[in-house]
Length: 129
Image (tube, rainbow, N blue to C red):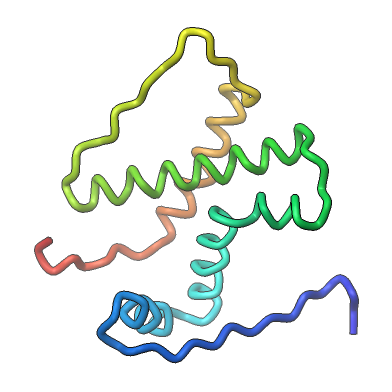
């Protein structure tokens, strides 16, 4: 087998009415490729930085850029959820002495990538929530 390929299987058996059960039923209702991408997108946003560090990737500008992409994805998801459920946006605090490792152009590129992903996700019927 090609050593560049990582094979993995996730199997869950959950009670259907629990939050995890509802989530699993939703993921199973999607196409296999789409549900796998949903799972991996969420896992990357939360755990990719730790995975790189675990396998000894040094903390350099490339890793910081990947982590910044993760942060943008998480922040955009939080903003989407607030908008979807009619919640107030979270206030942002700016520090005069803060510096950014990410240029405005890089941030705009990442925001466009994230928007493209969100636009491709079918809208969820909230049942009047």
